[in-house]
Image (tube, rainbow, N blue to C red; front, side, top):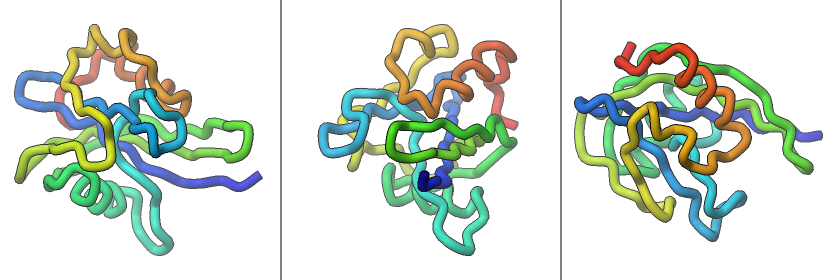
Length: 135
């Protein structure tokens, strides 16, 4: 089975709210929520990929912080390795270009959304450890 390595950003704003992105109808897993990010290109470090992907997807620049989770989820046709990091916006304002909607939510609201399965280990880690300050 093919494995795809991707990165995701847990972007936390000044109000300690987390940016979540709703997958559009043109994406796989439409209508599910995820942390924005994308594929790691050959020769890129995960943090470099994350900076590039967020600029492409959301039109803003981020600073990447600590690693949160590195996990693999097996979908029926592909294995996804998702590496998530804390991040904060340092320039620009996140705007949905590929996603249907962006929403800032509190840590208590994390379980109120239907997340893509690959994102669930990050959700669990954030919920358990209550680690929402940018690190």
